[in-house]
Length: 391
Ligand code: HEC
Image (cartoon, rainbow, N blue to C red; front, side, top):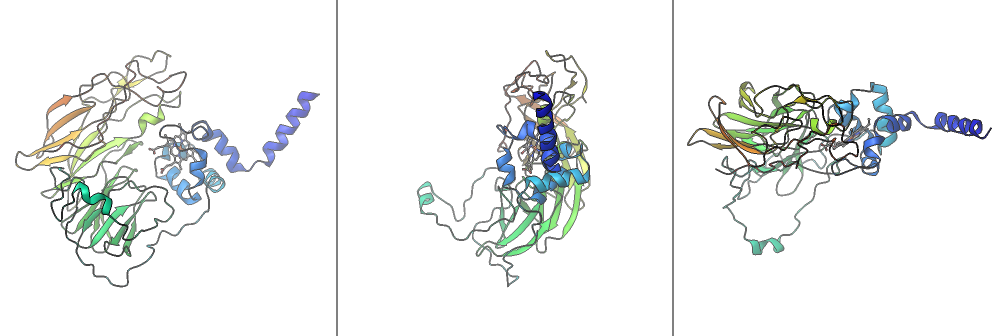
């Protein structure tokens, strides 16, 4: 009798539970209730709007989880979980005057110049000046809880991309907005300004060129077809070419025991700056993944994989060489090109040489879990190069 009563109570409780809550429990709670090193907790997700969560499930880093649901289910979860539904993606605090006054000292790419030295000679800043810096203005990014895109400063404008996939051009003096352009998904790359164009990539694996003055999209290009591909490395623009590093979140998908890990390979691609056409693309892992040895827990595997490029490439125009650094492998067998510095011929993309700094580093989201189903035998240490080399 007691069991029957309990079952009855449970049934009633489930029927009362909103659809979004039920779907969340089934499809999201295993990762987000506990949270983790890189997984936002349920409370953190609740700080986002429903629209923002929906975008993440449809075109952002949760798009593989979202693909397992239909549109009305994605909406139900987002509405239940998020703060509000609609947030206008327009530019707030519009500038009255189209003209901007250029500032002394510009910053138009990841490391200042193509050599990535990160040195700003004009007007220059000494360590003892830092405590004297004062807030000039602040800009509230609509519906954002973080900003990961390093701004570019040029022609009196400050340009950066948002968590919601909106690129803003602000007046560097006052913080009013000249334009806001929506791209496909979240922008984690820094912004490059070169030759009247603005270049960036998004977590959907897309690279964009926008018009500097108006924000009008000029071209967009997907450089990798892998469903988990993303771009966080700021593109490097030099002599009419855009060099792009590609990484992915496939490593995290290996949390799911039934996921057969992994097939993504990092790459560097050279695009024509005017048209976005791909001139060459070279993988950091030479051979495509094939079925490999099962893991210790007996899970099927695919490899080699990984060695994503998370940091902006560095261009040496004098020698015609493009340098890039890589992260870990996701599955066995480990390759000699993970956690390594790679040198490519700028004209053809040929890999000239590579130097590895941590050998045998295959690791994925299955490794920190108790049953380690998808964890490769090499099991880490999960290093990545996050900053570019200097030349
Ligand atoms: C297998 C584990 C896993 C599952 C299942 C999962 N997530 Fe996530 N989620 C992650 C990880 C890991 C991140 C961080 C990814 C990153 O920032 O690169 C994340 C990030 C997010 C973010 C923030 C993304 C952003 O743009 O910053 C949202 C929103 C989100 N998840 C929603 C969901 C919803 C809704 C579900 C259920 C439909 C879900 N997740 C299921 C692992 C998971």
